[in-house]
Structures are given as structure tokens and as C-alpha cells.
Image (cartoon, rainbow, N blue to C red; front, side, top):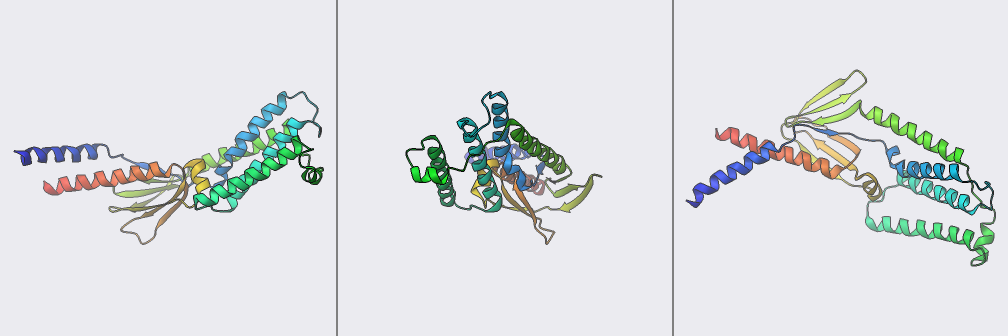
Length: 246
């Protein structure tokens, strides 16, 4: 009796997993410029702040100097993210500690000149200031680049289906079809920064009937994509087992 009831339960679970199989999954590889979005957000906030500021733009304007210093610090951090990889959490923690320490010393020396006279003297000529036009210009440049990137990736992406891969590319909607009945996938998170910013990483697709491997860098929300593909492949195997029994 127990065996008879167990079989329909297992069959029901297999059918439910098959029903949950997504029909298609889209994979998009973005260029690294998208990791500059924190600079875009800060530049937009700074532009709005400076637009409503009625204080003269001089070296005595502490708020303007602090905003410009933070902007330069964020720019430096973003450029480091684009230039180097931080595969381990320890390296990320060390970088954040050093960056925060340097930024704190600079701001401390600016706001409290009498506390660190030597550092204050060293930074005596460092008075970064920028008006609202500068920040609006940076915002506009990054905004235009982001829009162009989002348009470009609409003409170059991969579509994963249960038995095949489709590569959509070109403005004329060209399509390359790769037959992949037994697809293997590998996930690599080589940079902690990039994963923190967009939950992105590298996804490597290994079609069984093709010797080449398809490498997609900077795939956002890579864990979600991997889980969806794994669920699709698992549900496909359930369907194949059901068809073979019949």
C-alpha cells in the first residue's frame, strides 16, 4: 500500500517540476562601463545640490569642497573597480579600509585644520570645487553612455531554450542557432566588487554538440540566471524520463 501511494506522489512532483520549467531564459553580457552607475547617481545628486546652493563657489565654501572631494574619491574607487579584480573578500575589505582611511584623513584635515597641522599644510593647495554645470555634464555624459549600452545589448544577447541556444545579434536581427540537448553551465564570480554592484559574474555555457564554450562576462543577477537554467535542464530531464517510460 505504501509503495502504491509513493509512486503517484513522485510522479506528481516530477510533473510539477516540469510545469515550472521556464520556456526561455535571456542572457545579456554588459560592458564594464555599467559599473560606473554609483558615480552617475552621486553626480546627479551633486548637480541638484549645487543647483540649489546660493553660496559663492570659492575655496571657503566647505560644502562645495566636501562634495567635490567625495566625487573624486568615488571616481577613484570606480576606476579601481574597472582596472583590477578583487576575487576575495579580504582584499575587498582591505581596499575599503584604506579608501575610507584616506578619505577620512582628507576630510578631517579640511574640516579641522588645527588637529593635523602637517597634513593640513600638505593639503593646503588642495581645494577641489566644481559648479552645478560640471556635475550636470558628467551626469549627462554617463547617462547617454548608459542609454547607448542598453540599446546595444538589445541587439546582442543569448536565448537559452530547453534543447538549443539562440544568439541574437546585429541590427538586422541575425540569429545563430546552437543545438544543445545536454547543456552544461559554469558560474564564476571573479570580482567581489562587481558582484556587489550588480550581482554579476561570468557564465560559461558548454553545449554538448559544440566544441567551443560560450563565455558571457558581466551577466547581472547571475545566481538567478543559473538557478533558472538549472531548473529548466532539470525539468527537461524529468520530461525525457516520462517520455521514455511511455
